[in-house]
Image (cartoon, rainbow, N blue to C red; front, side, top):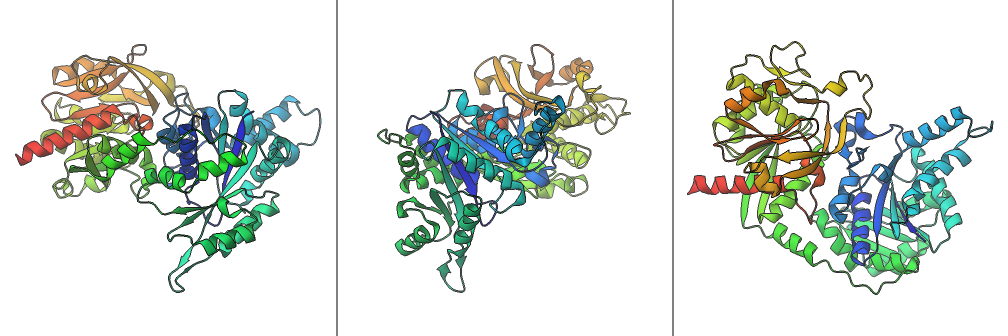
Length: 538
């Protein structure tokens, strides 16, 4: 029977439930258990696809085209296995399903209520992955904080599941905060006691406490927490602040979190944990032999989580090249009027990030013109690629005021245009070109050399594309279309010849970079940027 682990959070948000869940899953995976993780999000949106990045960070896209919470990115990066539609459940999706069933007459005239109808749907969703028979353990991260009104139906569903499945098949890991008061010079357990009290009021007794702290927990503190929170002392786990999220699996291994979980679920603990590859990655990450500065030109730089997967991809690719990558965020709106030289003089390369809308577009185009003319390595993703096309059209092909029709619907040179199948779509949610599509690479191209093969598959999230009417104009002027969708002939990758590294992609490579498999394009970009820097110094 599939075992279920529920990870809840208390005291405050942003404690790192996703990282703890992913770290625990990694340790269990290394013990030869088949593990997956899902996220329950309490907000009423159907998915984060229509949310502003400032509201919820980046929207992560799965292979099957689900727009999901960014925590699914952590799950994939740690476990090196893809997630799907079923790994992210929102309150909006729960209520939409129940209401649709009510309209169909599925409830036979009964009054539809939170209990049992909403909680039954939550339980059904939670157990979908387990019923596939593919996993030994399903870890479910419950979004929000215990005590939130939005989370109450989820906690009630978990209480019911615990009763139905039995304590040997279902356990609760509660992540909480032990704040340090510098004036008193001591750690305080009272917030955790209150958090556990809230959980108990919902009918859930935590089995394991994972305590975020900036100072080590001594034996007396652990004894106190165990006594007041009604858990055994060995189940009070210290989660001290780490220098990098990739240290957390090793810290949890040291604290024997995985062993405590397996013993409570009556599962074998004989298989040793082999984190050799993980430790080698950390060794390269913490002991680089070189260093480069990459400018991240974006529109949502105030919130780093808006580009979370890009930042993590640079961590992976930097470690692969034994190079520390300093990512310096630069707001594209400032580049519309400020002196670009002052921003770029300390940079070794730039990445122009994805985004939507007109704001900051001209700043991105100015930045691309600068790096194209000054032979600075460039990597453009989605909108970043589209801006590179517009810049080239204006300044090389002399197509005055060339633009994307997203920005200027009346341009005489619509080098980027709305995809044909998107023109009849009126609603926003879940209607973009989403998920994994194939791409054929031109032999000998930058992309081909990076991937080492001629056919790839990458994830997409866009509505606009390169206008194929202009392909020959661009080719004749030196821009190469090195990646093409074999079915739709959509241009997926552009490159410039006679440049240290100039490459733009319509897809989102950052969504497939993991610790064990850094994305080839990020690895190639970092390698080329480092080589260019060293050549300039020589």
